[in-house]
Image (cartoon, rainbow, N blue to C red; front, side, top):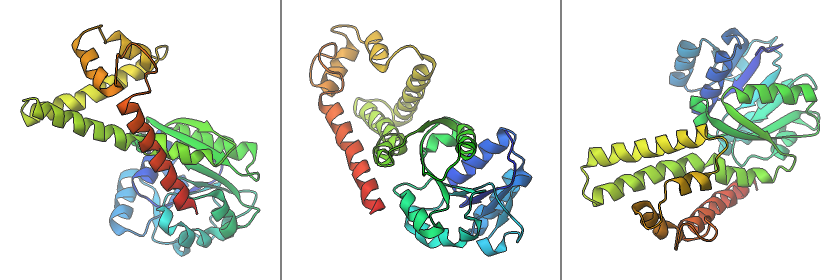
Length: 283
């Protein structure tokens, strides 16, 4: 993977850093990546670990820099203050990519003008290990070549899906964007349950973590099997797993809609709450 012109990343936090590491791993030269990162510790780490060029602010960038892509990887709360500094790059030859939750394309169009080509993406934190899931939406100014560039850059850290309806990104935020945190909390809950069942703390923590890691890898490798099939494969009628699932599902785990029941309802409410907050941030 190569870039015709330099790439500019605004914000060198964990997600921005993960994406840049993925790009470099796929063949993008570190010399072609410029970063604006005001935090001196983050800036030093990026320059040391990735070899990219880091500036403290937009005014410190090379005056002749014309990036092929500008990626905004800053917190949604400061986006409106940050974006206007990059207005000089707005034009048909540069695409703007945002990975900020709850920040609509309209905000960037207001700051950069209607001529700006803008792609909004909702990634998630497993991108840091190359197993991310991103969903992207482009405005009408994005060319096919620019969309392909964004797609190629995002696939460096996982799978990418595209939607035409930007409003769907709120649901995406609730499911995959926030989803890793739900899984991490499940590990916490499993570990606590193990401790309450009598296991030593270290053992309970280790088993909970390994169980979720292993189940996720099994799901990843079982491309032709649905989660329902994998669940049924380890659920013998009247067995221990069935007893536990009966609590989670509110009845016989081999009958009815597996998404119904106490756990299914709780997860539905959880995703809905995160999606609702995403909409609030966009207002």
